[in-house]
Length: 359
Length: 119
Image (cartoon, rainbow over the protein chains, first blue to last red):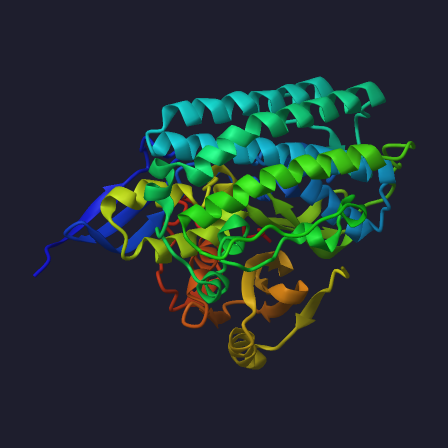
């Protein structure tokens, strides 16, 4: 009879950039159960909405997480704008989309590097992060910041990007397409990568939906759900089809993210070609009264921004349901039946962002 | 694509049958949100679901009075356990039979119900 034991995993672990703890229940080397624990970096940022002016709160929303920062700013502002019936200028919508897609690129490249590192593939890790630096350079050139951009405001954006800089982004996207090719080829075709990812942590489409998975976790199981298809910001004017893979394993989730990198480069090109001239913000007067559930597609998946205003400058409630919150339960399901040695890679395939999750 | 995003207010008696129906119709649980109302005496609980093929999003809204309890939906949607534990710990919502119940230790906060409004 197999010996049952409980092995603590995390909160500090070489593959985890942020703290999360799992009690892994093992029968010999096979995981038969996992109980997640979070709460190491909870900051109570949602509560701060009661003490900060709804316009000031954008800066708090952006600081929920360094990686998803610009998306949180956009999600929060779009929710407030829905409540206040504010129509954002088209150019601001395009600029938001451009920064959002750059953010997706840097997030996916960060994840690819972490995955390569977890598999011990150091040259692939360094290549992914080297390419990512170019995205951060684009952020710095267009906003002055490399991670927390602080360019989004209720009613539009705070900074414009001139045509010279837009052309520079176009040039870099072309360069990145070429540089990404060998990286993508390696991730998709290399024997080492395939042997670590194929057939690992399989979730069928029904299992993924039932467990509440979002983002590449859901799309890697064949469900073509991507909030960008709803056409918020400038996505309504761009050519967009959700990227999916059918296998539902760790390799499929990696494949989705790799194809989304190429898709983001195409979306960037299209957005830069179509961006109209015009104002970048509208004045917003009055205070929000009402409520709205806004959803956007963050790099890790669907994120929900709920705002409830009471007619004063302080909101009654702001709720952020991050993609990782939704992806932890499917991760726990997915771990059952895997080998202890595969746990780090499997946890990484949900691309956990604990800073977002704990807010 | 049209953004179909609606909030439906339901009574406590309708709550469980509605959740079961959502599960049977294969709606994905999107989020659970607690809001403290009436100076911390009551709550609004919002359960959001999405029908992925057509992006239709429905939020079911239940109002809880002072001291009123609500049943956990983890028997129907096991993935609700983190968000239910969060609502219980941060707002003090009395949610019965959460599977797994972290007993107000999900976020390891010493203060009871820190997000509940004080009267």
